[in-house]
Image (cartoon, rainbow, N blue to C red; front, top):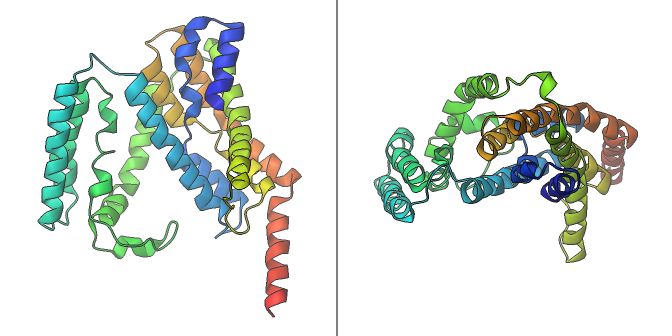
Length: 298
């Protein structure tokens, strides 16, 4: 839905060169969207993991779009297959040997995957995407942001907890390196990205969730339609991932500067999500429902 809105605006009002940036509003900044959701919904509310799962799936699809539609160089399927097959074989070998440290997976198999993408013509930032799912992991999850996961001995939990703090500094550096755009560079690309994110995310999530329910799917317990509107608004924060997509879509110039500003200004979705939650009295409805359930059980 965000991509459709963006393409419609760019096609109708121009310039046509901006159409290439259709994937930019598809992104969701997982960290900031989750932070907003945790501030709005009570602790333990299923809307929070619902948003996280939605954002992860959203960005995973976005990374596939990035690899397919925005290659970083001439495509070489042979280089991609040879290096990636070697990377996956190395991953399976490490797993069969029972290697618990994540470093061999990251440095060894991860470097081979990086080479596969780089020499294959795809963006090498995706190098760990094929590797991480095959790291040894626990048979079940303890819960969202559960501190006890840091005590587990499996590779994936160790990897997640070791990198939790360094990644925050990496994101900070990423923002400094990619966000420097003069406010004078606000233009059509800015408005298209903003409109696609702020309208496309909540409308798309509401429509497709409704379609899923029509064919038999169900929302998580305690998640209602008005909660989906808040979730969709929070998911409209593109920020870091949208910046990443913008740099892949456009070379330096006006189009890149304008779309970057749209990604940065998507932070307006955060206060907007709070406004929507207050208007719909989301927290009050949740507390009333939980109180009624407690009284019913008693």
